[in-house]
Length: 271
Image (cartoon, rainbow, N blue to C red; front, side, top):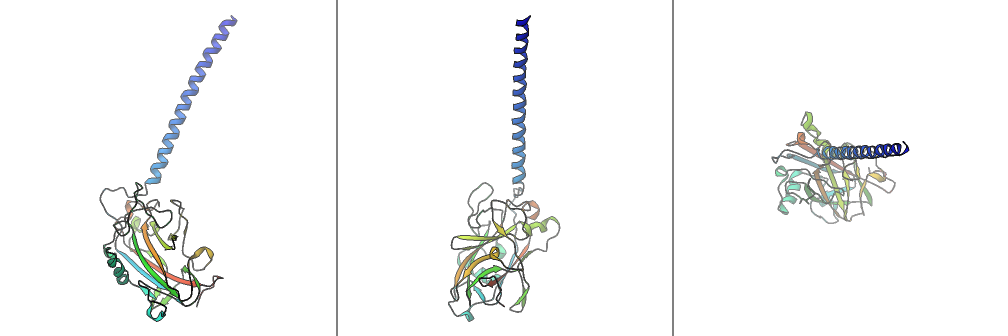
């Protein structure tokens, strides 16, 4: 009788181990399914349509506040030779000088970047500037005082027109989400600040800022020494990892306005 009881216990133990193994397999499978769903969710932001249709019709308006000037070329230390506003025509002059398409012919196809400098497509392949992927051009700045330069959310008059910092569109419905999928970076000496208009949750390991009407250390983009020209590289791209970067925003139109303002060491504006 005693031996039979031990045998039964051994049999029950074997059954229990088999049941635990089945539960473990089911749990592992469940985790695999969850991981797959997370991966699918993370990649749904990218365009999925097979035809090549991207954001186009880009309009740029770049202006500067007092004591700050800019140009596509280095005009030396005489600020009277510099400009307060860059137009599409001026940017097109730069683009054609580097054998790139003009703004009206540029397309933005989704890429991703963690540093605002190197760009990769969905599969991780490096993309080159101005080749139907992301827009890149260079701008020179000069100031009449030592200053920190910020993007300004203020509304001011520059060269007789209203100037501010914003990304806007005439699109309606889901296509209007293009204003939240866009990114712009400003590279200075090998590092870049990334502006995320209508900033949402962080993606792709990016450290981004949104524009403000007040200035702080966190909104500084670069520093200028008095009457010392500096060249920055501008990049504009559709961030493929952004939740708003989906098929709905293809063929969208957008206008990018940038107003650069300067401050002293205490972040006080130059008026």
